[in-house]
Image (cartoon, rainbow, N blue to C red; front, side, top):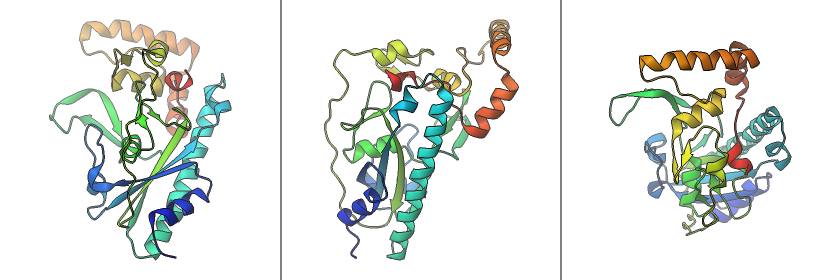
Length: 260
């Protein structure tokens, strides 16, 4: 079978993936800090982007642990498909790199652009899937900072394969999926990370990862209030046990922007 955009998409969809698009590796919309596909594979020609719809039952479950399980299983599924399709492309002679839908990620304390220390440690995926998806017309990045698609709104998990295969790329599209004047995601955000159409990664990461509504203090005089917050938190939840579960099983503490 010839390797064409159509044949690759059929191969992906036949495995149960809901959406697939093909982006030009040299013409991706880039996140900040920029991470082009060619930084991961210098000979890359295309990025195959895959999306699997979330279980809405898990999204709206009052117990977020059930969402965590669904997210992990969906990530494993995407990784399995990426491995299978990537191997098939390599058997056809095209170097291919499956990129994990979840972990591992890179961890930064120093801003690579400025050399200055971040206030809060940041993590960065090897490739921004939502930007790659926007590049090939699968969706747009909404006010919530989530990928929105016409088919599923914000409810999909993404994975990707970087490849040398010269597949026909899908064009980007002008989409208008955010409802005009809607600020539901901003009003629902418990950390204040979404405000006035802007997204701030640090408060989002701290609340999403740990459930803390305060960032680690930037000034010495702020530490007493932060420590009191930690003590109140620990009376309700065991920080040490919770941190272990967070890092081992990747528990999320917040998906309010997605729910609303």
